Amino acid sequence: MPAARQSISTPVGHLSLVSDGNAVVELAWSTQGGPGDRVTHQAACEIAEYFAGDRQVFDVAVALPQSDFMQRFCLALLEIEFGQTCTYGDLAKILGAPAQAIGQACGANKIPILIPCHRVLAANSLGGYSGAGGIETKVTLLRHEGAAGLLI
Image (cartoon, rainbow, N blue to C red; front, side, top):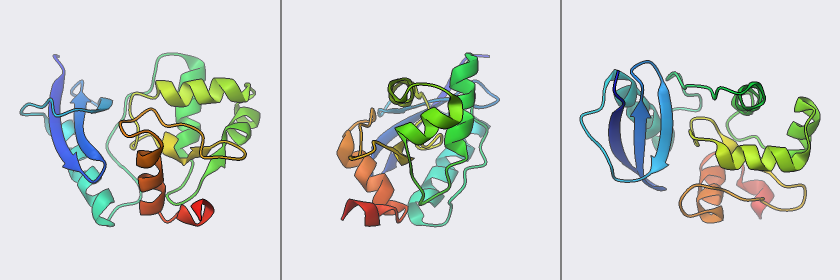
């Protein structure tokens, strides 16, 4: 099945959701859109609810990466609750990988926000963020989730 694409406007910019018909396979900062499908419509509604303060957990299906490490990494990210954070080092211990590999995996996450890499911080700083707007977007997401106490 060809990919379906839908664009939505959010407080962190325009997002383009891509579906394979069964799950979201990509979320990118882009205005590229189309008619979408049931998966992109569900994702768009859930993201709107998230930013409205009416949703803390996403139910839409997301496609996990192929590699074993990236699957374990994404599943670990999905365990970090709304408003909570952990460090690259924490995830490195859980996954038995170097902290640098965790940072690289965060940057390779194709479905940010839905798979919440913004909740992963460096030991003494915010770390990075690969989404449009970089650290400012990460701060916006963390503030939205009430995790901003650590930023003050």
